[in-house]
Length: 387
Ligand code: ATP
Ligand code: MG
Image 1 (cartoon, rainbow, N blue to C red):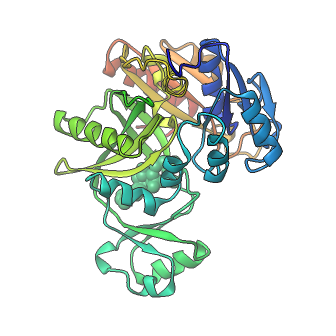
Image 2 (cartoon, rainbow, N blue to C red):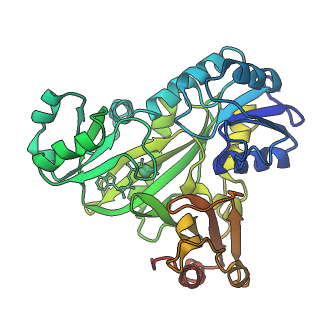
Image 3 (cartoon, rainbow, N blue to C red):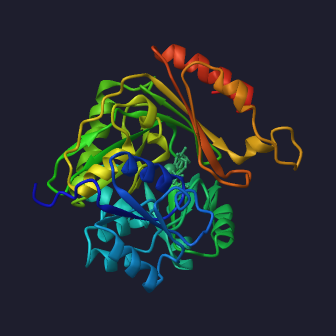
């Protein structure tokens, strides 16, 4: 097959976090050799890859080594400098490409892309100057002020009710370029994960419903309990358009808000496998990480099939301090592992911190109700807030 990078070749990944680690596992399962570039000597992916290049993302020597070793390169996080992808892309297939990642790195560019694709997003305004701050339309308040770049897990965001709070929040965010979004009344949130090949083939996962706490994903349910046929069609069509119009190659996640009237509003997108797709490892016949491998190597994209209803619970570092003390203590894994259909994934991070993603747990079962009841029991046992 023309352009197919067959198993046995080496695949490179920029970034060594948990997404890189699960990508490495999937690549290795398919018989690829893996190399990770990450400056942290203890990175979760660096520890499981065949090779770990311990270098900064913009280090020319590190990038040259990555390029030399790899038949193709991908990224596991969107804040990798687009310049690094661009320089690699001149030598090797890079998926996703620098231009697509550059759009996803910037909330304003991302929203402009949604609009170009005819996909609704929240009413918003760009705030880069005092004049723009002063000119904000009061219809955007109450709203959420978000830094245009580098935000994740609710970081770099402030909820604001009036112009005074807005001005204060912008100062707190160091007057960085920001997007102010109107606070929308959400009925529920879903995300769609699509994979697209260089040849334009597109497949998608079933929609997952996501519950966030403090701006961080807490629970994902598949099938989505609230989803209607119409919302599903709209969201999938939107995600496919968003990927296609960027000539995207790889796995892309688009997060949507669903409003009470059933309208579907794009929130943001991630140019990579996403936390809300982790359930696919245990509940689908092909995972989001395997699809990333397939897309970047030019392999056929198998359409994923959900074989079990699933609930994913994120395991944040807070669980290690569940007794309220400052002393780190491992959660009761032994009891959790005794529950039927529980799949525990820990990312190999040596120290726990509050808010840090340490792992996740997926419950699969024969029915959604059964998955929910086991997941609720597991959540209670671990001291997670009920859902
Ligand atoms: P991540 O990258 O981890 O998904 P993030 O830091 O980029 O998160 P967002 O996705 O922008 O943050 O927002 C996090 C959550 O905050 C959303 O999933 C939603 O629950 C809530 N939220 C964000 N924007 C709005 C809005 N305009 N109206 C109502 N709720 C919102
Ligand atoms: Mg988000």
